[in-house]
Image 1: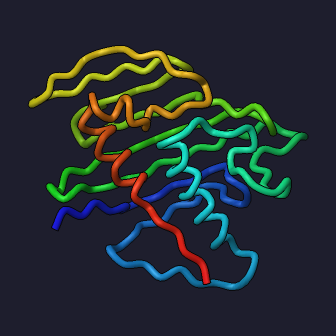
Image 2: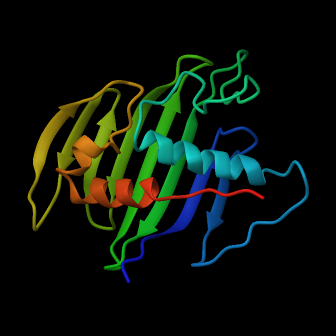
Length: 176
């Protein structure tokens, strides 16, 4: 069975998450009292999924006005690191940073790397892809400041981006 899973997650600057880290097993149950961040965690994961497919909206998460990530009084970056392993047991790390205020978020940094190489790096709107064997892909790419490089267009040209895009794009969220 071809299974890809999140092994580790770090979030800083998202709602109440400051220096949040979770090591994840193949099956996790998330439980807790009201107001401790369960919903915020799933909103963040939903944001990553949506950013892998679409331009991020001005409010980051579409919905009611209460969905504020950036606060008017401060400029606080949203940063994350997601470690996944694909079915071949290849581990990848996806890092990202969004700067901005309400209505003006921008990707400032993104990268995908494994234990040996950095495959893709994005600084502001410039993306540089350099992959080792077997593909030896190497190219540069310009991208809008509200677009993640985890898009279908780029994933067809980069194995590492394709693994992340396919994995994150397949996430489903259910509530009772």
